Image (tube, rainbow, N blue to C red; front, side, top):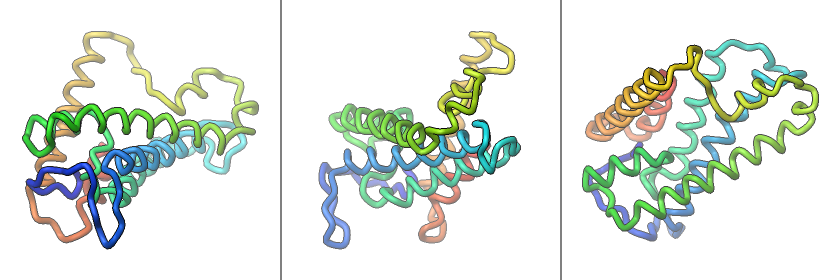
Length: 190
């Protein structure tokens, strides 16, 4: 995704004498993304943290950097999809074999679970200090400001569509070597 070229991704990739399974790469990249993204949410929202009460911009930058670091970590191995919708888009674009899609998605789900567990462990004392259940839930999920199932569903479709198109557009351009993950991280801040 982030360092996308029109190549088919194979099951094992060798880079600089290191062989890594693409599924392990997706697992690690997604775990890094969720660890840093969830970590910044925990730092801002849970009580008795240095970052407690910081504004939404801190969370946006933290998530953007989480996406960038996850992409830098594994982009040369698995194209760093780090998201099932991105994986589906790449399969529809014929950049990824459909036979690899289930493995990618399973690896991403498991990586996100491990990343979330690491956030929970890293902030263990802060869970007890924070009494509001909605604040704790907000570390791992979001809720609409105005609950409206139809409008919220449409918003998710629009956001995911624009994100996916943005990723494909970034991948189509020859931007300076190594900058694609940083640009994608900035895209995720929107």
